[in-house]
Image 1 (cartoon, rainbow, N blue to C red):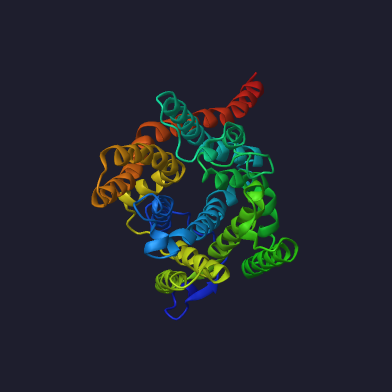
Image 2 (cartoon, rainbow, N blue to C red):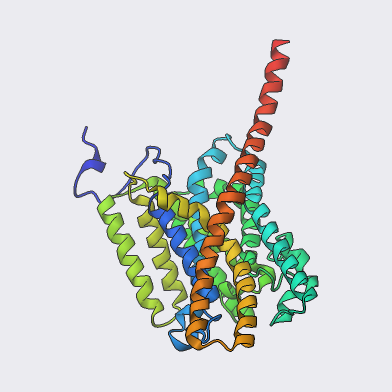
Length: 387
């Protein structure tokens, strides 16, 4: 019998075999690094002599919402592809999944948060007060350090502000096993259309009741903003697992959607249309076979989380010192732009060093401890059967 997937004209078809696992060093990894890099540019855009959003293009400011959406959808997509099968077959429990994900994000987050608090304390002791002290209120720090600021717990404003999305993802991790059970009962297109309809419904409800879109929810309710996007990513993963997309069509989809996203953003936010392009980009990237994984791309992707969680801390530290130098030495605008570019480079250098020297060794140790924890009950059971 002919394999329908081998037919040249078959660009899309439903498939029933187990899909190949995600392979590191491909387009999905490249997208993670690209998005993390653009988030750095968004956070740094206002730190130069002139804000890029005001002098170059507004996309430098509104791009933050777009990149965060991409990050949240991608998180749901990748976690569904990597852990969905393990949870569905019982090879991993919901508690193990939640613990694994929390331990992946919490250590680096705590080190960044405590490091920033120490920086503010030392700077204050030396007579260098923060330029915007309202963003460093001590009563806001506990909720942020515990990553509960997007789960309805008061506080969490300022400091390492981007961590709100990590807080929201903690809630998504907790709900992931139940969401998985629901989505896996549905067909791929039913799941995708159903999730898209729920997102539009949530958007309509927030507009009707609150006067703004769901992606504009206040920080304290960040989970409500993040969850629909996270589930959208899970639904896209269901499509990737059950629908064959020919590699050539996948490449065309990825390129066309990326061009479409850049084009619409050049004119306005276009939130819903941008979500469509992001979804197509992920579907295309996930369907492109990785025949020759790139070690460089893999390492860049592994570094992406550290880059995301640390760049705001680097920005605060770098420009805290740079602003003092500019004020005391009267540095020219050209030199100020040089300091700005050096600050962006410093964010990447710090992320690379922290990832290589701290985060990855720590994560290796944590994985080893978790593996021992999972093996212990089986070993005890084996001993009891032998005795």
